[in-house]
Length: 335
Ligand code: FES
Image (cartoon, rainbow, N blue to C red; front, side, top):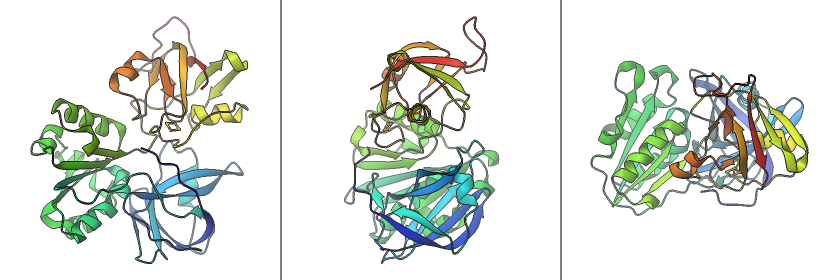
């Protein structure tokens, strides 16, 4: 869960940029005020979208002992909201505004056993944890899931570094992950840390609950942007504020409401803390709940949504379920 921390902004120079997998770049910063990044930490940075400074968060993949080098990796998402495109254009020598490392996905040292699960670019949040567990000689497994080998950053390095403790499941090689097998030997003394697409994490969470394992031992970091359906533009109506706003595919509902002048509450902007919750009074279409804050039951009720990540779509098949046409429409009361 998100923990509010003071953000100390500083300038940082880009000292290395390299393409490490398809559509994934590794970017290394030399920050003005170095602080070592603990596993599970991230940095916020300012990117320019349409001439405006916009804040984005990226997991720290690794950092030097003294914090003088901080590495992130950025996936250029096909449905990018502009941040990853900007990051893919930075070059060595550029100066950027970044925070010192912030922690909201801490690794608890001292568990008897660990499973680390990385899905796609989620490996950026997990790789550093695996290094630490290896260093302290913990009992751990690192499981890396991806669609195809060429799109999996750090695959070779991780396989080499973690040896028998490492396994990869690659969809287009027919070795997709089977969640029941992943959790087969997990017991109450095992902690599982995961970061990846919401479908993967949701499936793990369901099986975890079915197995009656302790929920506090299941820890996760979200991207805050991977949903059940492709994003569509939709309309949000806020009668109390006399607002009707079109939410484009590249903006969140929270951002669109902020753009329209609504004073919104939020913290994590990743679907974890619940602070941006709004009440749904009417929906023409389907809510694509993309948060990890609500239980499955709460999501099914469709009474509330976390507007920083969740969206509305016409229907799972792209076909309206009512007689109207046009984009989905959700009517809300703000928090
Ligand atoms: S701001 Fe945290 S869930 Fe939306």
